[in-house]
Amino acid sequence: MPRTDSSRTILIDVYRTISVLVYTFGLAAFIGLFALWTRQLRLGRTELRSWLYPAIFISSSAWFGLNILVPSHYFVLLAGACVFPALLGKLFGCRGIPFVALASAIIAALSLLHTVNAITLAHAQRDLSIAYCVVFAWTCATAARAPGSGRTSVVLLVVIMVLIPLAMFTFGDWLSLLMRSLPLPVLMVHSYSRRRFLFLDLFAKWGSNFAVALIALTVWFSLLPAGLDPIYSALLMLPVLWGVFRLCRSLGELLDRRVLGRPYSPAEAQRVFLEKLQGSEDETVLLREAHTLAEHIFHTRASVSADGVISLEDRPDGRPLFSEDLALVKTLSEMLHFLLENRRLEAKRRALLLDASRSELKALRAQINPHFLFNALNTVAGLIPSNPELAEETVEKLAEVFRYTLQRSEAEMEPLSQELDFIRAWLDVQQARFGQRLRVEIEAESDTLAARVPAMTLQPLVENALKHGVAVTSQPCLVTIRACLRGDTLVLTVTDTGPGPKEPATETGHGLKNVRERLSGYYGDRGRLTLSRDHARQVTTATIELPV
Picture 1 (tube, one colour):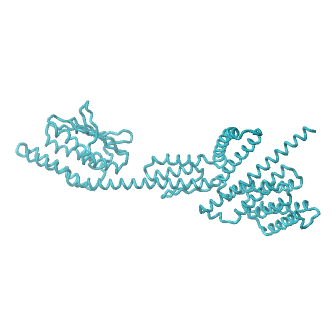
Picture 2 (picture 1 turned 90 degrees about the vertical axis):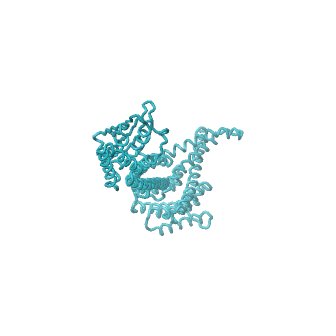
């Protein structure tokens, strides 16, 4: 017998502890929901402007507060519970809400009057409990037939219809605890299935963290030895706090991935989104990549506007998009808009460079280079007395050079074969000037001749080779022009065996600068011009790389 009494005492203590925990959690939960609702309202969520939301949150908070303050006052609690039939009916969109509210109000009034002995009812507890069960059963039955009530909601309503009379007439402590806790599961299940409160994800995380902390502290203080010094109590609590923090974080990740179906946390999603899109240079590619990432992150079909606004469709499995999802969509849209603006500014910059290069190209075509023309005419004048045939041939080559520039004065891209023909004619004129000091080799793979290149791209490079190679030495100088393909890249090289410029890596002549700006305007980072000097071989090389 003593052992039985001891076990019963332990069970009573456990029940009281769990009851206090549940009621405290319910009170804090609905106060937190009210705070979240007011915050969402301030953020402009106009669909939340309804009296139903604050009514549910305040009434449920008051209900759990009553269970903490007066857990044994049956008629006071019954009067407080009378608010829920009408709220439940309104939540499910039932008919006959005024009748339910009136009946509930009568039951509540009779309960309070009986409590203060204003009226005397012979079987008050039985009769009022039966009346309450009838009103609640009618409300649940009507709610189950309401449009949009899913299977989960119907099952929950049936459980409520069975649980309430069992708890009220069997007087089981644990059944009573379940009945008094009903506002939480009813609100959670119905809101999730009907997407009524889209901030329930924030509440789930906040509520789970609060529950873990409340349970941990309750267990800790129940196990803490009496009379322990406060300093030692604080020191011993540090591991508990660390464990609570880690458990809350793990629980939040579990909620995100398993319950809410989120492959990434908001911070991870932003990092992945930015990393994947930063390498996209083209605006079309950027929008396409953003569309793919949005569908991967949110597990639903998405659309992306030209301004970077991401829109999501309903998920195929019916899971709603909650507050953190909507906030993440807004953040990702802002990031995408920023990236698009950067790409468009970069495109404008390239367009301006390209326009400047086109103007310079037209000037180059118009004059080719005044000193080249003067040198060519002086060469022709010097050849007329000694070699009139070569002078006549040089004049014809010079005319061919000018004919090329005039006929294609508006073309920006030319086949490599035509560009090489122009270079050959231009070098023939230079050959007459430099004579035996200039030797030329042109090697182009057959599959490169049809490739289109910016017009007059090679001429400044070859002219640079003559200027710093042939013109400054009395020894024979070999100028080699090569074209080949390396994968999807066209490589054009101009090499000379002359002494080369003093600092080839920093060569910034007008011609080379023009070529670099034009390549940047046409191809961005994929078009490059490099100039190098091999001192061992005494060779200067200019290399152009173009995508094909």
